[in-house]
Length: 69
Image 1 (cartoon, rainbow, N blue to C red):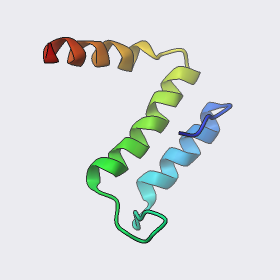
Image 2: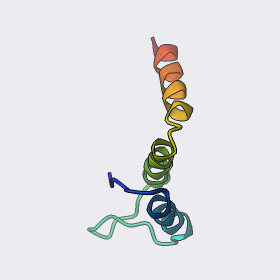
Image 3: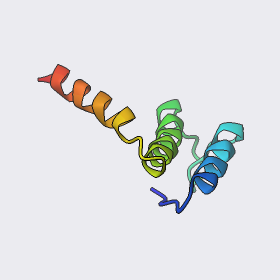
């Protein structure tokens, strides 16, 4: 997971992911759809953190954890 210093850098990385048409691991195997979504989610969460809005995803994660119990 990359740590961004500002929203601009995080958004630039997210845009690069969204616009990419070739999702591969370093060994050349294709990433699954879930792996691509995980990449994008990491950037979205960091953007929320940088904006002081981590409650947007932390609340939802807590709800999902409670539903599993």
